[in-house]
Amino acid sequence: MAARPPRSSSSPAKTAGKASAQSAPSGPFWTPGLQRSLIAALVLAPLLALAIQLARAPDAPPAAVSLVKPRTLGPLVSGSIATPQPTTLEFSLEEINTHLGQVLPPAPKKDGTWAFEKASLRLEPEKAILQTVYRWHGLALHLHVNYAVSLQAGKLQLRPFTASFGRVNLGMYWIRKIEENVLRKLLPSLKKEQVLLNRLEALRIEPGRVFLKVRPSVSPVGS
Image (cartoon, rainbow, N blue to C red):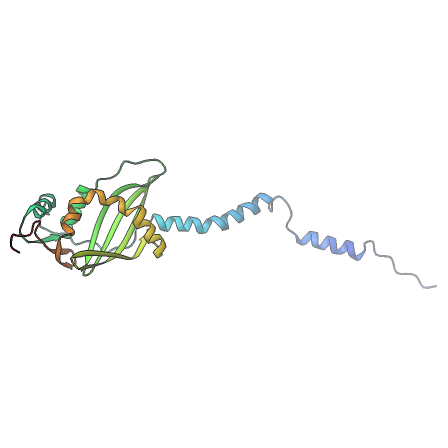
């Protein structure tokens, strides 16, 4: 009688189980804590990149440096408001930004809120870029809003069309929210300037310079 072949010591099911157990990660390296850390890194990495972009200042060409000492615009603005005669004014960008630094002082810092630090302008034909800087928990937050500038029926029109927060471009919804809740808080400090701008008769903007023709404060008798 022929000898029977020896029986296998393990069944096919047991063999498959051993193979799957060998292929799966095992040992102290692949732990649930490591899995959670990898998932957290994948989720937090985009948020961290966004935070870095928000905190970075937008690219901007360097402002031209004038060799002429800028005038103090406060007395010029007050005098132009009081004069009964039409007035033509010419302001350089450096004078305007120096004036903004005087009438818009930094706001006291409060925990958990944005604290206004400074504002400045860049001027181009039919365009103005308002650049504001805020502080939040020690971080400098740069907000740039681009305005189309025009004069219609004796009223200055400023229409925001693009904006960036750090190096992140904002949509129109966020631009309107920033206009309503952030930038309008600067207007109470610019009452005299608003009076002057409400009497504009002509406006011309050149790179780094603005020319204003202002109506008299009181119309002459018999006009």
